[in-house]
Length: 79
Image 1 (cartoon, one colour):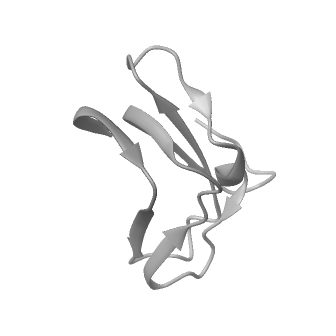
Image 2 (cartoon, rainbow, N blue to C red; image 1 turned 45 degrees about the vertical axis):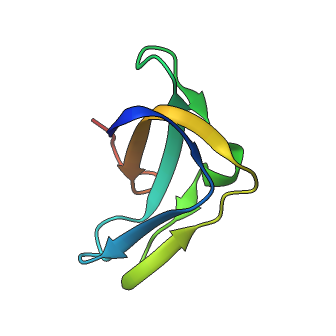
């Protein structure tokens, strides 16, 4: 996800519409779109069967212009 400018992010929310196929997420942040740093509290975060509006547990404010989400199922082949 590319934001219009660097932002200090204190809350991230998502709406779960098909929570049966997305099991886990790793979220990383970047200021330049090239070097991404994993957000520690959002590694191997379970999204399985979390329906409607949910909030990612950010442990602290994250500054980013770009966010990268890797969605996967543990022990499955990843593309």
